Length: 280
Image 1: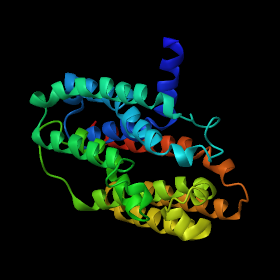
Image 2: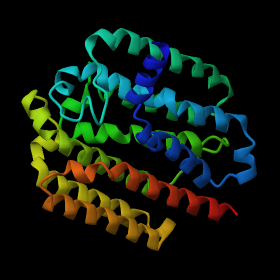
Image 3: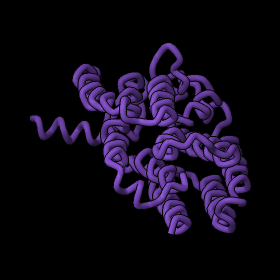
């Protein structure tokens, strides 16, 4: 039974999406400009990496599943592509979230102040995206904005060496990127969300309107980081614009969406490689 529950907890944490937190943490770490040897020999690097694997992902997706049951039970993704968490499991899931997250509070005395700020900001947006009283995911456009939760692991890594400076353009690019990522992921849920009476950016804009919004956000993101990563920014923006075009032409967007995490992972790995090469 314990093995079965552990498997369930891991499934709820969406391992295919771990890269969105864990990968972005390393991205911020390597783009911080800190010496590579310094980052890789710092014990805090590995402890925060551990946090942004199972614990942090279980937090954001577990809270989401607890508050979303009425919608999830109508969603064809659940019970197959994703785990359906029934009410009789909510208490055990909540205890698991607390049990895996609270021990990392012990790191606070050892972290730079800006990393602490980034961590708590991540927690705020990660929890209240789904949880009451804010429950941002039920408020169109605010739901997309609250996905800046995925940006703060970047800054948790970026500030880990103790410096506090950052540039605005990459931050704005990141905001555009995560808003587009969220809006695109909301499209396969339009039918279930509408049936459950849940308003999202995708239910308001509908499929094609949401795809246009995503395209504009990806384009803006690419343009903002051209001074930092050059031609790769153009290629990356073109890739995501192509995905939006193919999605607009597809009658079954879920068949494309299934590959979306893999595309994001490949893009993030390439960005991380660029950051490492800049340090060498």
